[in-house]
Amino acid sequence: MKAKVLVVDDDGNMRESISDNLEMDGYDVVQAASGAEAMAAVHKDFFDVILMDYNLTDSTGIEVIKRIRQINADSQILMLTAHASLDTAIKAIQESVADFLSKPVDFDKLKHSIVRACERLRLIQENKALVEHLRGANEQLSRLNAMKSKFMSMASHDLSNSLMTLQVSFEMLSQTMRPDEEQIKRMRYISNGIGQIARLIEDLVDWASIERGQFRLEPAPFSPNRMLEEVLVGPQARAQARGVLLSTQFEPNLAPVNADKRRIAQVLNNLLENAIRHTPKGGQVVVLARRIAGDLGKDELELAVRDSGEGIPSEELDKIFRSFYQGKGQQGGRLGLGLSISREIVQAHQGRLWVESPGPGRGATFLFTIPYAAVGAARSQAALK
Ligand SMILES: Nc1ncnc2c1ncn2[C@@H]1O[C@H](COP(=O)(O)OP(=O)(O)OP(=O)(O)O)[C@@H](O)[C@H]1O
Ligand SMILES: [Mg+2]
Image 1: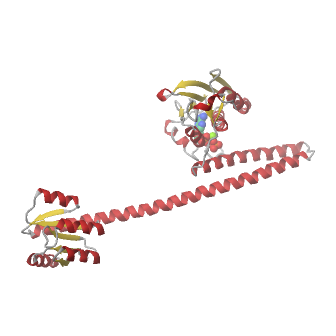
Image 2 (image 1 turned 180 degrees about the vertical axis):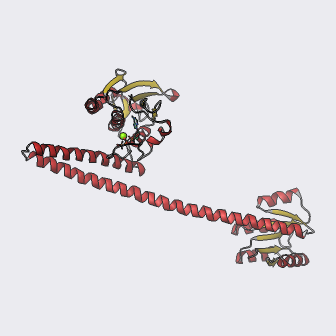
Image 3 (image 1 turned 30 degrees about the vertical axis):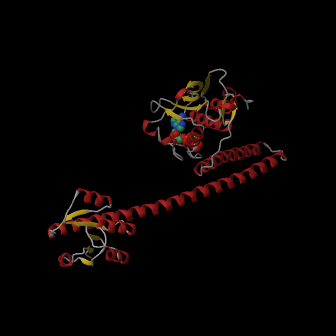
């Protein structure tokens, strides 16, 4: 279908000759002899191209274009003028006129200009449709994402509650029993299983609350040295059981840091759990803690977990921080959430968590910082937790 063209000119002969010429080429042409008639036509119909004379009896072409633009932004407007001045050209460009044609009209030029205008309009409309489609798809994705987060949040909270009931019932039951050796073995399996499921669910609850932007810190001042000693008890035992040497290098008497102690302990536990698991028997894991000068003169607490284990290929260094990402050859029973949750926790403290590894087989060092002034330095003199 040929395009619809509106010819606006107060000169009747001019209008007729342009219309006849365009109609012969198959265009669907409507004529308007004044600004008012042009507006009436534009209100009634959409025109692909509008040919606008600069001087009309009831107003200027520019005035009419301004009014047209309030109704539609897409019609391609070509301006016809007998006396083109720079001033006219600038005004016309400001009103998004697509092309300028001088009178007397050269019909070849006019037709060429109309073809180009139609092509431009087609591209604009295709672009708009594409943007609209993308917006719709985006909205759909956001809705699905919100539903997924809500579902995960509800499911993990429900699972967490059920597991708690299971755990409590199991403990109460075991206190009333006098189990034989075989039963003790089975009860240990159950208890370990419950512990493992509880850890997975805790990670899911954390991940869901991060996804929903509901992750909250509970900062209070505490001594890093004391916290490290407390945290290391469990990993020490695990490292020993695996034949891995776990040692520490702590700066003594580190100044209290105002942070969420439970969450910082969680980060350390995640890093230590990974380090011990990825270090073969006979290897070493070292935990380091020191105060360093951070950016803008603010001091930071830097904690690091260094292992002599499997190491990480350079192309994996970024990926391992993604939610649910796991390197090759991971055993089941894990979600690949430890590092992504840890990074969220550290970033919520305005700190950084990163990894350095010279490559496969050459160990890895995970480091993170907590700025001393991050969550209200004024309270750091308060009683230590
Ligand atoms: N110390 C390490 N040495 C070598 N690779 C590591 C080390 N720590 C992490 N990785 C790699 O990074 C991946 C992601 O670690 P992350 O802690 O997020 O998940 P995970 O340990 O597999 O599961 P989860 O922590 O949820 O139990 C691991 O699967 C592993 O491939
Ligand atoms: Mg992990």
